[in-house]
Image (cartoon, rainbow, N blue to C red):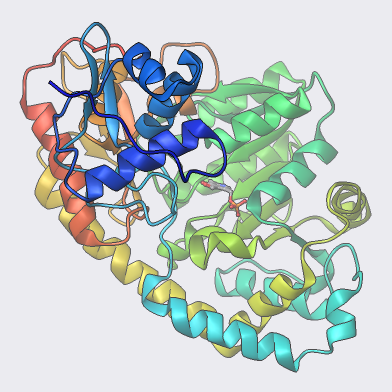
Length: 458
Ligand SMILES: Cc1ncc(COP(=O)(O)O)c(C=O)c1O
């Protein structure tokens, strides 16, 4: 048997990348077929006259791209089946169906949007566009942010709205202002993983509060407030990430009343609120809520614009936090977003997204409806509870072996209590409903088969 050996004579750049590129090329050309066994690391290293570690890195890179899978004790095999032709459309791992990124790009509008962006920026005064601008965003952008919030029902004057470099930055600005290292901040027991990493970065301790199918439990909040010491509550009452819950109105009123009673600042993350425009944000129940929203979910992630509403006496401190972290959000991007809010483009994109999410939810219901997935029908992610006897790591690993990436519950659990047996499955990260259906069908097939032990990944 001849040993497969790529021709790297014309490769430029690192050899390990060239090895992964060669595997990709030959898989595409049909020279390496699904299931084919690749040479051992040592065989290939000897054949190419390179270090063993270079081949190991090359295979790891090919595995990261979803081209091959390594099976301990058996070798490295060309992957086949579900994921090969489906792409993440993000240019990173073309062979995998990546259902971990929680964003739906405005595919239907991409070309018009880039054209309108170019038109708009060419109309602007170039010198002004290239210069520093007020740290909190210029008047026009803050007015656009206030208008956006008002459309969501939140009374916002531009003087209380700050423009940030995305929602994550708004969270960083608020958290670093409200809490010092070592302080406690409350949140739902399951929370957005970006808040976990932010708290970790700022050395702030998150304390997870109990939830039920309607979200954060008022009793749990009240008990934590009575214990004292917490500097803020970070919460996602609308389309909670990952649980997909929309908190009912009565509960919002209760949560706001408790926070007001204990003078606890609340940071409401309404990143997904645009998907359910009739739901009233928590900020409509109390003027003391810091309300944040961003363009990553509602428009497009690369714009990196967020809006943060705060009490009037906090404007200066939060502006200082913006200036000390990024100086200001990118003015050209802020100008584009403001224009799209004023001229109705933003509304059109959000309307398209609502339709697309609804259609993708239908695909999900048809394929995975018989499994337990809680959450609101407009959430763009599923919280899939795994049937007995599946363990989360086992399921995530099997899905990965079959070319589908999902996020384990561990990513979202705040404290060290045992995470539920569940995964988050995003519906927007692949470009087509067809690719989504293939990914979800693979997940359903895995759940339908008896749980196999995890096969360790090299
Ligand atoms: C709940 C929540 N908040 C904030 C963010 C961060 O958004 P941005 O990309 O605007 O920083 C995300 C991104 O996944 C999110 O899910």
